[in-house]
Image 1: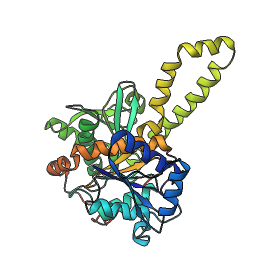
Image 2 (image 1 turned 90 degrees about the vertical axis):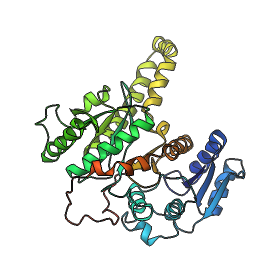
Image 3 (image 1 turned 120 degrees about the vertical axis):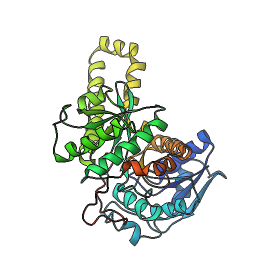
Length: 355
């Protein structure tokens, strides 16, 4: 298996990207192709005190997509950028998955333009695994699509359902619609219309739809797949990340208050570390764009080497799942026939939020 990795994307590129790639190569034994400026990549490897092994190669690129570039046009204008070249390699079958920690919007637009969506999928969606009291859950969408239609949410439910079956090993995941209340009448027109479509899919036996769910109940483990428009999903995701950071600070303050609390910290150290790791986005690695015809994953913009190593692990799992084929085989269940003005197969206008 070969994973293509954008070496120039993210706040800590290329050093942390290269360091993470080398860790992943040692841990997982997969070939890795680093796209980017060869001189910079080799310098980063030297800073790690290593030379690139035979299984880690470089595809030289002369350009880099910056955060200030127009996301919708970045891959069109910078054809020799590390992101564009990586996506082209994936499309050509020169790798099994592509990872970038660069611009979310540019990656979404480029993946749609170059790799293409599964035929019949209206919009690709970002689907991170989020921690809950009952284990991980899939949140779909979390920022790729701010303006949604009921059909989009129906498709998000299906592709999230397939992803949960593979990633969480669940035979029949519980699918719920993120809303401000559990009652069927809650929400705006979008949620009400989407609820009707999801309920119909549930009654037909295609989804295990359990109704609306509030964010607090979702975090208690009330659902395995949480369906949301990109705006609501992104707010939920960022809130979880913020609470994680808040808890780390407060726990440190509590346990280092005096000698007695320091001894207490030693007794619960392992448990506290487990909580910290559960809430740490670097442990998640990367989020897949569900609905793209081949695995494309977005790593956090501030990813460190551990995050990149875990992103490769996530990419391997996506590549082995065959999920895209499963989505294609069930596409007829996800279509309502509605079309929005100006909706075409071309790359969507950028809505992606940073991760």
